[in-house]
Length: 295
Ligand code: R5P
Picture 1: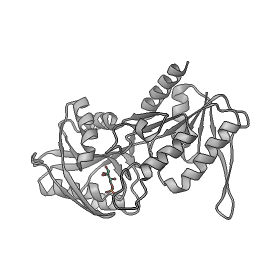
Picture 2: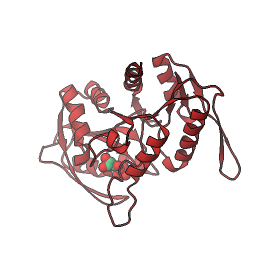
Picture 3: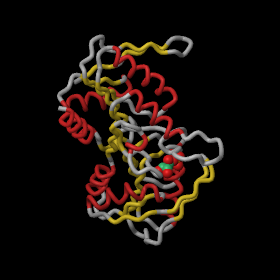
Picture 4: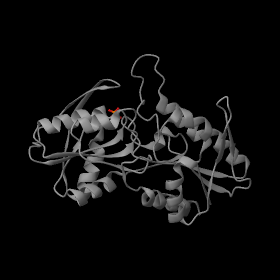
C-alpha cells in the first residue's frame, strides 16, 4: 500500500498515513511558464495505491488528478483508490435549463474511468441516492463529518439548537443532532443567484437559544449569512456555524461574520483556518475496511 498526496494537503495526508501505518509520498509538481504542469511520482509504485486529492478549486486540479492517476497505473498501481475529502461538481446534478451539462454525471464517469474506488465526505447528493450511482461500475464510499461536527457542538454548546439552512442540509443536521441528543430544525432556502439567497426560518422558536447552523458546504457564505440574520432576528442568544467543507470563497467569511456569526467550525476536509474537527479517523477506518475486503 502507498498513500500519494499533493503538497497543499500534506498535513491531512501525513495524519492519514500515520493512522494507517502506510508509507506516504508527495507528488512532485513543476509548473511550466505556460501553465502546464509536470508531475513526478515515485518510480516504482506498489500494486495498491491511494491518491488523496480534495477537489476544492476543481478546474485547476482535475487535469493534474487525471494525469497522476494515469501515471500511477503505468508505474505499477493495479488498484487505485481516490480519497477526495471534497468532491466538486456534485451540485450540478440535473439539467436546470435546456442544454446545461450535467456535470455530476460526467465528472463521475471521468473518475470511474480513472479509479477503482472513490472515497469522499458529505458529497452533495441530492437527487441521487448513493455515490455508486455517480460512479458507474465502481465502488463509491460516502462518509460523513456531520456526527463529528455534532460531537464538537455538543461538547462546546450543550443544549444548542442545530439549524439546517436548507432542506438539503436536513440529512446532515439530523445525523449530527440524533448522534448527540441535540434539537434540530430545518429552514427553507430560495437561491436567486450566486450571491442572492433568502432563508426562511422554520416554525421552531430560536429565541434565547444557542443556534448552530450546520451545512455541508460554505462557498460564498450567503446561505449561512442569510440564515444567521434570520436567527438573530428571531432572538437567538448566539449563532455559530459548523460546516464540513470550508470553501469560504472571496468575502464569504466577512459576510458570515457581518451577519452576526460568532464561531466558525469546520472539518479538515478542506484546509482552512476554521478547521476544528479531523476526518482522519473516519477516512482511516474506511480505507482499512476497503483493504480488508480486498484481501
Ligand atoms: C447547497 O445547497 C449547499 O448545501 C450549500 O448550502 C451551498 O452550497 C452554500 O453555498 P453558498 O455558501 O454559496 O451560499
